[in-house]
Length: 156
Image (cartoon, rainbow, N blue to C red):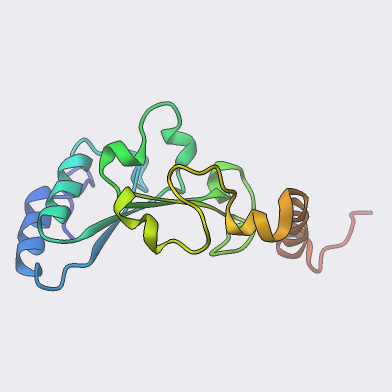
């Protein structure tokens, strides 16, 4: 995927590639705000292009603290957004571990979720249901100890 001179998604290049690969286009993953810390002005257009050619948009919500109060993934056009809490709450990075937070999906994907959660329920995440809030907190603390302190010793 090409970028423009400022490092943002080159919308013309995206459109050309989406057109060329429309028979196999599954999804586009986008970090928002971008990895270089910019709220790309064309994000809605990017989502519209991917949707027009049959794809879904997966938003990496690692930068959620930058979004709070400014925007919502649903309004941007994302179909799936995970909130990986390692940046938002400064905890260990997780791929399903202690840093893994909620995953939000657009209405048309709710039926594919595991468990009983729905867009209208206040159901807790599977992680919290299995471990409980204290269990999740303890797991995060345990992981922090493993990642940060394994092999460390107290200074004299």
